[in-house]
Length: 189
Image 1 (tube, rainbow, N blue to C red):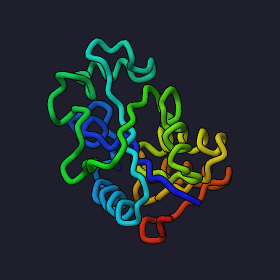
Image 2 (image 1 turned 135 degrees about the horizontal axis):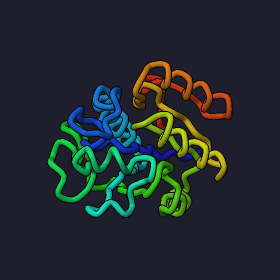
Image 3 (image 1 turned 45 degrees about the horizontal axis):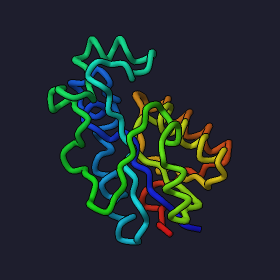
Image 4 (image 1 turned 135 degrees about the vertical axis):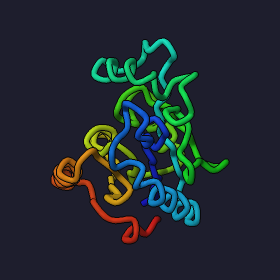
């Protein structure tokens, strides 16, 4: 077994309360995501930062997000103020050896080279962290399972807008075959 850590959408546009796309629980997970990245690097587990970056004209924003994106100052796009930008929040940043993947939709696998990179690295299992649990984490989990990767979700490194949403989505992913553990229980391989 060879793992890779995928840290999804941990950007200012999703973590800062000034953003119309902010996920309420995301900022609280910044230290845990930073610790997960460090733990992975110490064990030579590749770290992938899977991010969003919208065009300034909004032609690539999902229909379900377009109104909030436009009304909220166009977060995660060029020219957005720093607090709602595509940049990383304080205390969280990729290292030189890490990978950065820009995804156009919720799943880290959809229309990205992620699967190619993972297979070339001999990765058989992915470990998921980031935001938001019911959307990007869950879609990535389902796609990873469909591609025959083992999946582990670090429950304290993920976030949702409410505790109930978080709990329900973690339980659903566990029921379909994902392992749900805490960062302290994760022993990178």
